[in-house]
Length: 228
Image 1 (cartoon, rainbow, N blue to C red):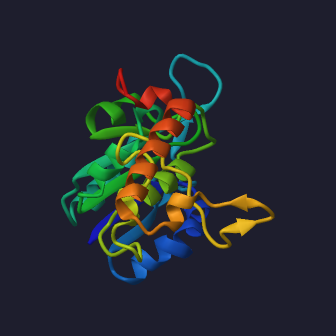
Image 2 (cartoon, rainbow, N blue to C red):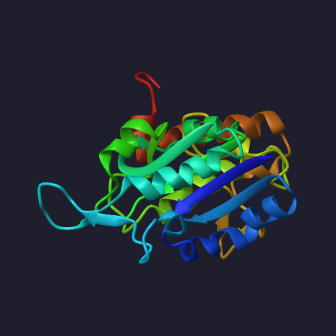
């Protein structure tokens, strides 16, 4: 079972994503356990403050070392973690290959930043990996943590109803997914390609590969190697 501990100052932002659909089913099956950790519980001051002004001036507050260290020490006293991940705009870009790798972990911590970020010394000494979900800035790391967790949890064996479904996701083979169709085969003159109705598995497989390749060339050419 995979355990994901998410450290946050706003756990209520993360309650809904894990209480529905595939993520809820994964937890109900005992395939993953997601714990939302309130960072303020580890602050040693009466106001439960976890931020302070930045040295050198400038707008915005910075998350302080002590509560994060207290929290990490508490969590690590109970189990060993494969990764302690900080969600950051300048981190390693999340892609399918990284999600595949993280799905092999047994225990991971996701640290959600807030304000102007966290004290750099936390990143230097306590974090094992930094991950970004894109080249833009969010109000906090919570939504990024939910995205990362979703991309990893759906890969765990037994989570999806069809065990092979995740193998055919976009990016698993370095390309985007081909187009998909369902009933009816003819809707207002808009028809499903004949090959998909043929029952010929070899031709269908070839068609899907060709369509995925062509769609990738048009929409995400940067994914392809030179000559593809």
